[in-house]
Length: 158
Image 1 (cartoon, rainbow, N blue to C red):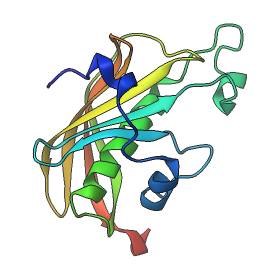
Image 2 (cartoon, rainbow, N blue to C red):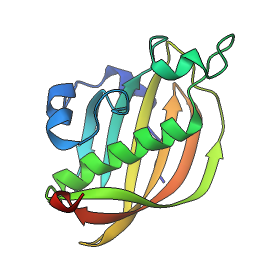
Image 3 (spheres, rainbow, N blue to C red):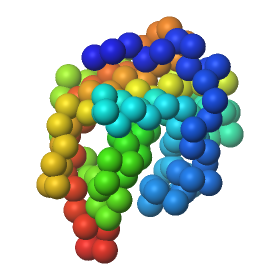
């Protein structure tokens, strides 16, 4: 998988939160993507961003004296980023549901004040589901990496 660009923080915003809210069904406190910085539909790649703040509800109970973002929420942020790419690829009438997580590695903690970059590369897509390679980074450090498998279901059936 290609590396998540370290210069991502300097990229212009391609899609802001208002546009993301039109695509993803998630809402506070589970909407975990703040903006999309890059989409390449020919290469099946997307780069999203999450600004991690101390005001996040999970920091109240997740190591209050030394808060870190829960790894499962980083995986959810990666999955949501992949879901935005699916929408852009023409699957807008579907919703992606977790099917599998493989080769998950938690490498470095994500703390309040960090800017989390969410990179997904599509391995395959079909009308029934697909798989992406995903990586979340803070600066040049990988926080989480995984292969995420998903099933696609009609939005009106959920």
